Length: 350
Image 1: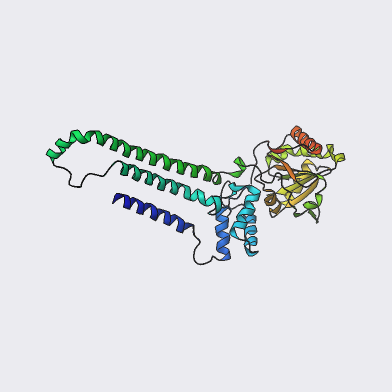
Image 2: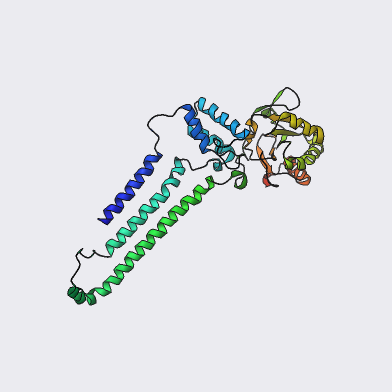
């Protein structure tokens, strides 16, 4: 009876989990899809809050992107993959209920089922249970000497089964938590850029100083340094002189420098350059709708990306880069050496 009850409970629990993962009967509206997707994706510049819950300008810009993708007919999985390709799987607030992500949801349940099965088998090997009414006192005294030796192995077997159940259950839950925990961490702390080794995004963006636009894809063929900055960013002020010096030092090596004003007002960015100076040669652009930052997977400011002459992102510096680090990194880029991910300090968000 107990075995049947335990099995029924586990089957019922598993059925609830599976039914919960199945899509609802009525298809959601476009607005409902936007809300659901935005609630499942972390705003990379909002302290870990979802795009739906965050109140920053970046979150509003990303919400517009999600709406445009929904209106364009992209599936939920396509939209999730779009954000993961730029920010890694840490952009998702929970594992997706598809593919390997589905196993993260089911693994703890499977472990619990395996543990229950182990206990039931151990109890079965321990022998049949005593009758409900039990033996009389005289009968118990007569058989106590005969069965005493058998009760200890039976008790030990049942105890072993309980321990095996506990170990299997804890292991399964632990593995599920270990793998799913990556979805709860702030990506700007634990995750490197998934774009390193990928083609640089080709996106059009307006120039900061003049009423014109530039397609960053047109820079292919030149070694390019793309720096994301803002006037309110303390680290950006610290590294600005080094960027200006690096641009001048590598002018004769056909290295292009692009400064992307991000999470800021154009007027404030222009005042910053008027006060601290402009690099030469240096192209300053204004990312007013956060599209360039999204394409590059920017997590905070300042961030600097290094693109080789073939148009491939080969390196990134997170945080304010000291002058010597900037010069050495650009020199490695000119020589064709690898760069990879470099953490120079803490990035900031408005």
